[in-house]
Length: 225
Image (cartoon, rainbow, N blue to C red; front, side, top):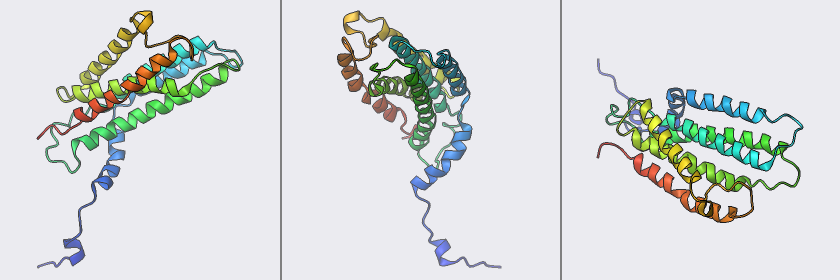
């Protein structure tokens, strides 16, 4: 028996790429390896909770805490790029760069949100009239996060497992340690907010901010050309 389909069903346009990408959010959120980010979140909560309620926290200590948390959260977010099926999907409905972008946005956005929550708590523990610029510190976190994500996006092109994320963590930590060991005249992690060479260092951070994300865009391209 022949079945006649309505003309609207025959000529129905395929769903837009944006809608398909939106539909991918839930399954990708389930597929992402959240365990490292959960571990770092617990560590961050424990670290900031060492500051007792009502006790003033020196600005220098607060700066170290936020930098440690930002670096570790960026490293943990890199595990979101690991996709063991990325090389086996063939002609998928959504390009690889869209899937990788979602894998960056979900854990990356979560990492920034966790860092901002920790930052908000730290602000309540600082003495009055202490300069603690959120914008400059966010630039530092943005660079660290971008380097971790870009390194992971590049590494997963060659290795599908968690070792790719570990490679990204090594790259990010090497960058952090390398810049910490620079001479004081060109040090990129000033120990005091808003004083000394703080402005010059953060002009450099701001100039570097787009680079890892450009690297991320290039590394996220489709593997098959």
